[in-house]
Image (cartoon, rainbow, N blue to C red):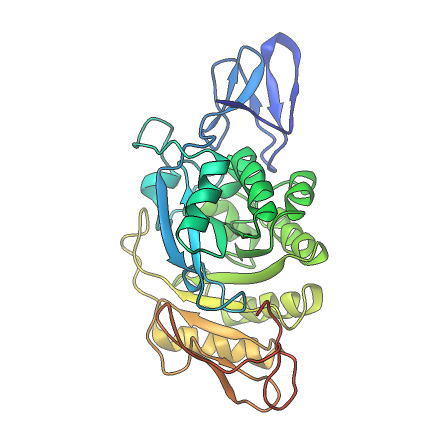
Length: 333
């Protein structure tokens, strides 16, 4: 076990965690909302430090990150636990599990870096479940990775307090943050969390020079209102910038939303149209086969620059960060 960061001791052996906005007050022998940070005799410990249950080598496009070293492989790790309880979670078997529910690997930070390098990866991705809840493991691995020339990638729900995110930002090169809806009532009803901290994390990520991309999973009848989608896109443009890529993702029945239908293709196409009309330069459609929903075009001359099929990059015409017309394409190339 690893003593946790960002907590304070209170009376009668109680501790309060300050890692994420829940700010859990935890009695001796109990854990917080995430299930993986436990009070043991007045000290808070991470129960998942260096204990990933999921390890894989993934294309970076799977995260999804489309403007961050396209086509490279990322050494990807995740544990059990999460600080949200989304009714649609695709990884609910691990994210909603408690320590001891799955076989785990003994993978200390230095070993994770060694494995990433040995497998020809250019980055380490902290993903699958919510990496905020294994914060100490992410931080120490990311530090070592940075020294070894590896990039660090965070795939997150963005539900983290400001100070921990600031500290982590020194080592994180890119992030895909889920903006699950532009609606606080959706967050409270469907995820159990709330919206404002996520918006703050998005702004802080850009401020701290993390390459940011956003995923919005559109669930029929819950967060697909065109007016709300337009509000979200305008907020992104005005607060984060028009060059932040936005990925609209198709919903498939999962976890506690088994009786909700698939997102209609026309809903995703319409959402992309709304986003482009709102002024966003790079908008994608995921989890659905389309003619050009995964391709990158020059915002100025509309030339096809990156052609993708699934997670494969079939063509990349970007040279020295630019299109052939001279327009600078936002990203890390």
